[in-house]
Length: 393
Figure 1 (tube, one colour):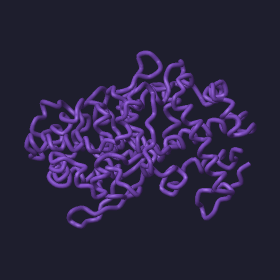
Figure 2 (figure 1 turned 30 degrees about the vertical axis):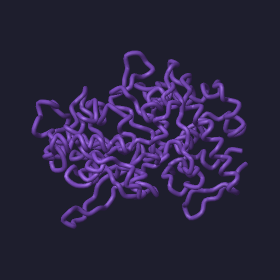
Figure 3 (figure 1 turned 180 degrees about the horizontal axis):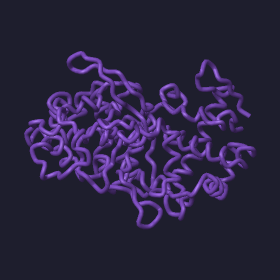
Figure 4 (figure 1 turned 60 degrees about the horizontal axis):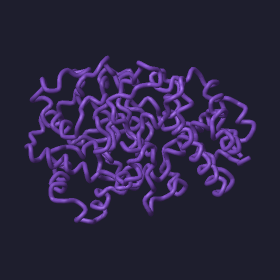
């Protein structure tokens, strides 16, 4: 067994770095298998990869994803998994407004409404959601994992005790998915904006440079999509804060963060996405209600001037009218902002190999491995599980 101790409330570490590397490598390998497995769902036919397509930066090009049960579908657009493992846990953060006054706001958390504190909590829910994989209970999930094509590898990794215990087996399945989503190809930081921010002025063309200036000023994009670093050594292009943008309604009202916090002023608020690979993740907004980047920029620019174009929104009383909706941008400025979005696309997602069915991108040279970046990853709630005290061989 891998020995572990708890020190000052911090995450226990295995006895040696070699043990930890072995754990992470084995976990990521099993996680890859689970991610692509479409035989776990009930009925068979849907897996994580069904709604997180590598060709779409691990997002879904459909407005909302159909579930494995015929006729059922979700209510939100499946977001990109690129950089998702770097999103900080849900927290009520302190900040200062433009008047120097202290304000508080929610940031971080997984799912678009923040109801999961980190990736470990997030990966569990789709298995049992009736609009997604629809697995009846944890016993059925464990049984299907034992019957999987990768069962022998999984069993060797976690040992006989965990393999024969449903809760332990499922726990390690969730851990495995979390480790897989930390893999370097999910966080390459190899877009042209990275070159430009690193000092290469030639990385952007003139339209993109104009767009970047608007991004930082009149467009107010940088208020939520930070170009500076925060929880990771490179910018994630989001503060992962929450806002009600006034998205066009689509189906039943979606309360978003307001349901999680039970706060009326936060109804209709959703987490700001990273803008990395935004050109690959259409359609846009939490419900997939806007089809193109051009439409999205025009929505931000003229939402309040052309309300009939966009139609009603779910919670008009909490819509942000201060920071968007009437930006006063010209058509050329909108075009420049749209052009800039191309510079946020990772080159590793644009290769011919990735455009093949279910092909994962290659990791660009120089991207640090998971172990070397371990202190920066926010996944921690697995430590609260009783199974955490029993480590795999």
